[in-house]
Length: 203
Image (cartoon, rainbow, N blue to C red; front, side, top):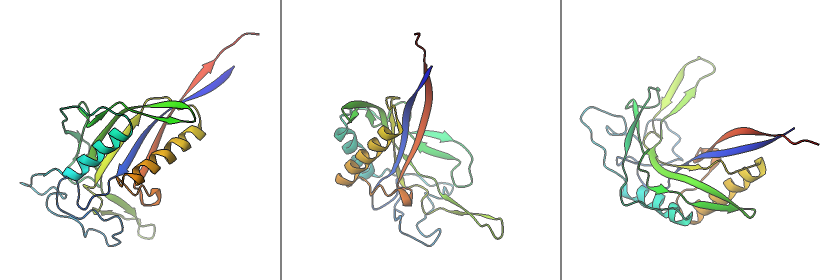
């Protein structure tokens, strides 16, 4: 009896834009001081309205074309409701049924890894846990930063393939100047979904 891993990825990429997704606050991953790059829009003050960042949309479409994806004529944003302290609005502006990119693929080691969708959303803030006091602080500089999510089909079969896929995708993102994709800064985050397929064979 053997087990074969079946792996799919959800990859979040912070986009390289001057401003955030729905406001004019700076998108600066190098800012060291907390809560500097914020405004009433990304802090969800009552009465504020989002204005879409066209550059972020262009970068997602550019990525989709580079990965052989389909760009639909219609796309739509939705609300994803959840209540975390690093999410000022109590919901995330995201996409589900009508993403900016459908399909696509990336070839790794002679095998085709299919892409299900690429959509655009906004990032959350960042929680800082103070060990000395036991307090949890919130830095909202990252809240509202343009965030691209790429979802693959469960086509990967090993950790090595996952590594190669991530490296090749990062190379493409940097070449297109879509993102610096610096994992140490959280600009490229990979969630791995693993199932095990049991092979049975008789002697």
